[in-house]
Structure formats: C-alpha cells, structure tokens
Length: 204
Image (cartoon, rainbow, N blue to C red; front, side, top):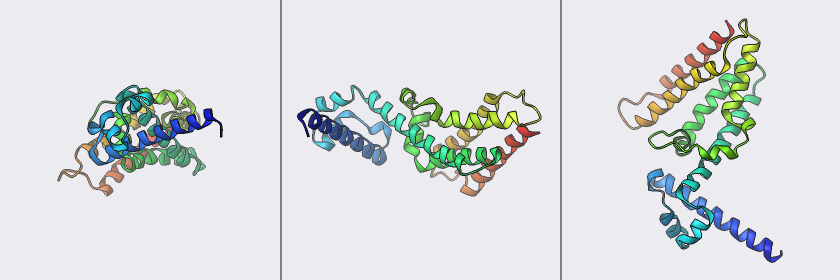
C-alpha cells in the first residue's frame, strides 16, 4: 500500500471513529447532547482533527440524516419487492415506514424533526429515485393509473396518508412512557384502517 492510499485509509478510519462515537452519544444521551467536543473526548483526538472531517455539528447531522434516509429507503424498497400487487406493495411500504420509525427512533427524530429541529440537507446525497417517498409515490401513481379515476392527484393521496402516519408516529414518540401512550395493538388498528381506507378511496 502506497503512502497516498495509507493516508486515505487512515482518514477514513478516523471519520468512521467520529461517526461511531457521535452515534454512541446520541443513543445514550439523545441528539441535544451531541457535540464536537464530546466526540473528541470520546475518541481521544483534538477538536481540530474532528473539524477537519466535519466543519460543524450541522455537517455531522447532515451525514446522519443522509444515512437515515438510506436505511429507510432500503427498508421501503424491500417491502415493495416482497409483494406482487400494487395494493399489497403500498400497504407493506407504509408499514415498513412505521417500523423504521420505532426501530430507529433517533434517526427518525432527526430526519423529520420530532422533538427537535429537522435536518433536511443530508437528503441531497441520497439518489432521488431511491428515496422512500419517491418509491411510495411511484406505487400510488401506478395504483391511480389502474383505478376508475386516473385523474386523481398522486401527491394529494401520498400526503394524506403520510400526514396520518407521521402524525401517529409523532404522537407516540411524544407520549412515550406516559399513561396516555397508545397500545401497539391500537396503533396497528388505526394504521391499517387508514392505509386500507386510502387504498379503497383510490380504487373506487
């Protein structure tokens, strides 16, 4: 391995350590606790080295946001390819979105601004054709084209379902550990009713 390759590999190793340390802080203490100084202390590097890889905390948040969208997109894509009919695909994709929110709550909160500011810049590095929202919109568009009313607006149907889904997710995240928190069974009933209802509206 030449000196250039060695330096590049070392640089990538440090970058990975920064991201790993940052993620550990987030998991243990939450996004508000994340700071460049804490990361530097955790991996025993000076702050200037951290800033050499990420110019600011915002740049670090953008990278985590990008990774979150990549993970969500992969999960939604897997749900889509596991079914043959458009109706089942759409239902599975929305359920995958729900599952992602509670399997990866830290990512979801950052990506969509639940209990914190939303970090959108990171999505620019995620190919648009692979974005979860684009994948869902494609299925809705195809479902509308096959319906009795092809003049329907796909984006309207998409945002109707997304608003219900995101609202229910946010409600559960905010009320977590409270007596008013909804049960998993009740949540699933609401979610399934909403998804099936919108699919029925599209097809009628």
